[in-house]
Amino acid sequence: MDNAATTSAATASNDATSNDATTGCPAAHTPAGFSFFDREYLDNPGAALAWARESRPVFYNDDSDYWVVTRHDDVKAVFSQFNLFSAAITLTPVTPPSEEAAAQLGAYGFAPCPVLADSDPPMHRQYRRLNAPAFMPDRIDPLAPYIRETTNAYIDRFVDRGHADLVADMLWDIPCLVALQFLGIPEEDVDTVRALATSMTEFVWGRPSPEEQVRAADGLGRFWAMGDRVITKLKELDDPPGWLGHAITMQRMHPDVISDTWLQTNVMGGAMAAHETTTNATANAVVTLLRNRDQWDRLCADPSLIPGAVEECLRLNPSIAAWRRIAKEDVEVGGVTIPAGGKILMVIASANQDDAVFDDPERFDIDRDAKAHIAFGAGTHMCLGNHLARLEMVIYLEELTRRLPHMTLDQQEFHFVPNTSFRGPDALHVSWDVEKNPIPAGPEAAA
Image (cartoon, rainbow, N blue to C red):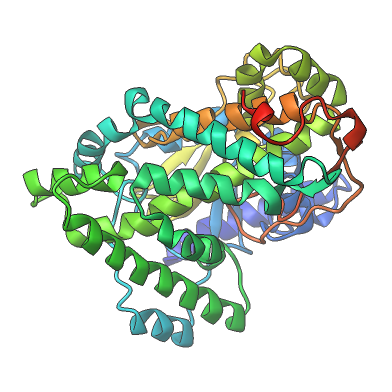
């Protein structure tokens, strides 16, 4: 940060710390004491920032060197006002790479370029216009039979066992397979995507140790190399499949907009966005529903309630907890001046629990009109893949409620990859009485 930014940040942090100290709040409930890597935030980021929404909705956090924005309207404003806030740092590592990690990436020729997530107008507008057709419902909905068939095939593997880790046994693999179908990546690369998917989360949004950072950098570099192989294969085809195939076709028509590096970068980012976020969102939804048994039972009895339940799950327990921007100039947000160059974390999970927008926001209610949530972002950076994510979540819940309505949540402690932004349990243990299975494994299970 420059001197002006440092002075402004220190003043905001010190004032807030002294004011909060008089209330007897825990140290973590002050701008100076808060950390995105503490267990309280990882467990429930929205609840962890309730104190901030109430009294310090925008504050500077010295631990991360970010300005933290917590209220719904302010988060939406930062997302939407691209003239004041740049997306350029969205994919910049929160923890600067060490020399060893940078060397590891360099060995793979790692050199990504701005893509949809971290570009600004006018390039972002061009990228979005050229790529949006691949994300339209008429291109996404034909995937539904594949998603449902694959889901039932995976449930068949464990339904007679009486217990499962839904992440390991189902939710890690199926969104990965769907992502490959959507992207047009050959299934021969599925093991690579499975193995390397968390490397980007840990490297870009985490606070890894030096050893962990080098390991994550190696995984990211291998992901980058896979992207080069995938694009090379797809470009050999006259009519390449999937979103990447569409992007290659657009490149042939608009080579000045879409480069080979852009395509390669999107293999890595697209695979992660279409895979890990949906895995996490669905796991979070299952945990939330099974903790609210009466509402799970309602979905089992009436599957037409599932689309609305998905929206409420996305509101209360989103898979992307926070997203980043950088101020282009001195700008006021929520009554606080963020200096030019100030790095910003918009906490989506906190915005989705803002009582100015949602009544009794910490209560889970599948009857709530939750569509004001911003789990998929807002403005020109609204996630293009939101229709696919919603489709997958609905189908996963339809099949789980149909085939395992008697499933219960085991006693367990949930663990999350320590990072600012991506959130989902690394395991989800459930069990059920096999004798009560309403539908046996095999051909009869087909919906």
